Image 1 (tube, rainbow, N blue to C red):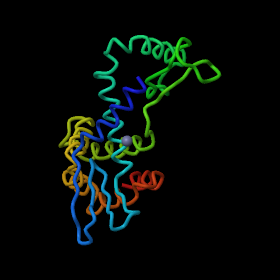
Image 2 (image 1 turned 90 degrees about the vertical axis):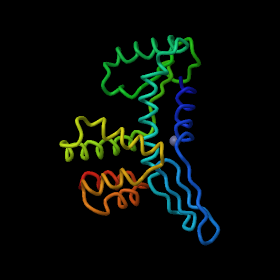
Image 3 (image 1 turned 120 degrees about the vertical axis):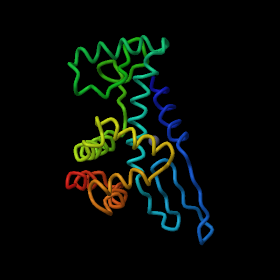
Length: 195
Ligand SMILES: [Zn+2]
């Protein structure tokens, strides 16, 4: 399942639309999903963490909808379920794999674990989405509808729609600032809380 997870994650990045554009100095601005790179200023990369958060949330969604239904993972799933039961779950919600004794073992409890990654990125995304939903309840029936907009736009590499939604909800310039603080997740968290 670890391999399935990793392949799915990279496939979702790869399946997102990519753009390259020649600029004045014959270099390329690059856009992939939500991530924007300005090669004229190498340190300028926007929404990289946002891109990872949305990608991993999609992995999680597809994982539960498709991957775990595959017969080949039956044994790994049974092992994971029994671990979650014994641990008494909520904090283990993000755990998708606990390998049993008959697998390759590498820790003291003779078990190996795997969790969905980019947890901080996904937390920031969730807080932002909840805030957008709460301020637009006349428009959205449930929170997931806001996530679906972000996910759809990520796959099309369309930053205009989410940008407008965010700026109309919190004020002009919010989306830009969100991109500028994206490389510092703690700062981004503070900014999202302040909205
Ligand atoms: Zn990634």
